[in-house]
Length: 615
Ligand code: F6R
Image (tube, rainbow, N blue to C red; front, side, top):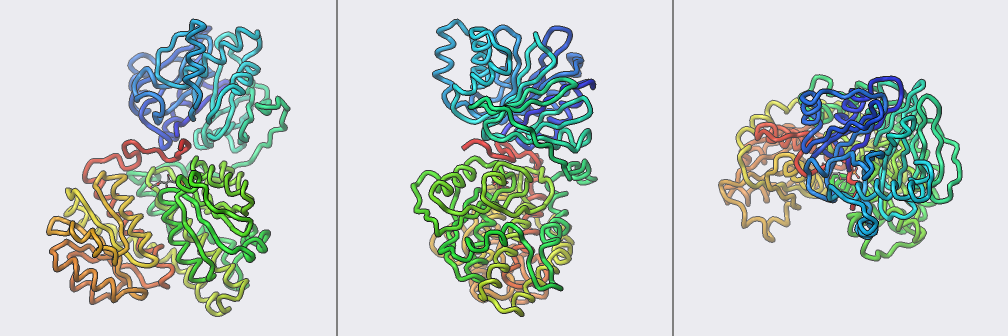
């Protein structure tokens, strides 16, 4: 959580940093600030609120000039969101300014020691403690900023991506990373620092991604010197060429990133299977799987670890893997798994799913699984992310940047990748025949067109949203492959519209939730043909007899459910195993429209952040 940006070069730093912060707002948006070096002083502008509030404040107070600066958009951990706790923070002398994404766990004891040495604190943050610790080391040991940062970081426990500069030596920014992401954009005689590449992609395609426990001294007009924080060993920085472009991270005419990303799904799914799904050759090509085929084929069990929407994708994958591969699969919340001393053996394959590749709990679950000897495979969207580096092997979803805080295209592309893996492995073990394999591939290839067709329900879904926008509760029901879709539909609604929603396996309704149903209760039922269709029809009848309002997602041409439901949304027919890729779409649109109609901030829902880098 929190987004950090820095600039050092010949341009005016303020507009570069401000625009960068806007792009990183998905990481946190409860306060924002910028510090710039200007003729011997550090000019600071920070405020509670969003980057737009910072822009307004800077306009009012007069924009400061400077060609070196740092900026931050915050998701509060220590201290409530207010002006004092907003970053950047100064050291007591006013010489050092810092921005920080992460948590310093032992900040309280360090703060106490610094107070005993006469330091004063003006915020409740762990970050202000860190910048004063750096200052204390710098003064007492009489070392340069880089060395002081290194010594200080060896005293802290926790996670950090930091950028710090010194008013008395304004030709460098010192950065370091552990647990939170940090990229350095390498331009012509200029450098950019950011939590991801989006703030600098219009200036340069070249980036260095720091590894954990690495720090760098970024020198104006010169170079980037990378070292290990613990051992002080120099590291040769690897400059990557990025494939991302500016268009991908802008709204492209849509009102919200979420809507843009919902509409991108046909293309995103195609990008996910492009080059992998080769119908003519009768193969699925995935290097990460092929190189480790033995691990997968000898596995006695697959454990899937993830959080939130990615966990829901994991649940869909559980049904798919068990059906196609006949191997036991367990799907775990990473946050529970990491702390409950789970039984993990060398015969397990652990699949970690994460859009951002930075989720702290998922990362910890991966480390634990590796320690216990399991083979760990990552399914990530963000290239070069911590999870993609920490896992033994993996497959990217190639969904493109997902900026809206509510995950949409990440979910469908994760399911696509996991389906490809399951098909590849089932074919390798002979669990499915060549013709079954071929049929699945052929059907998967039709999914982008079918998603496109499903998106045509948008206007109809908006009329349903208008009817239920004032609901206070909502139930989502599904069975089999569509039970996780019910969970995902409920999560989407609650996170962006703040309506309480629950997802349930349809048959579980009788064991409690049915008591909630009355004429006020909208119930979204996923009732596509095949699978347990007749059973779902019975469930729909049970809701109807209790006067619940039924919004049914059905297969085109459906008669039975359509007779009973108050509203029907049709999706094209597909193989049962692939239905989540279609049934999810109207649920995303429903929550989107309801949230917009309720006046909610769809792309930046309250209290949330896109990338949960704290546990
Ligand atoms: C919900 C949502 C979150 C994320 C979760 C995991 O719309 O976006 O529930 O799915 O925080 O994030 P990743 O996939 O980045 O590990």
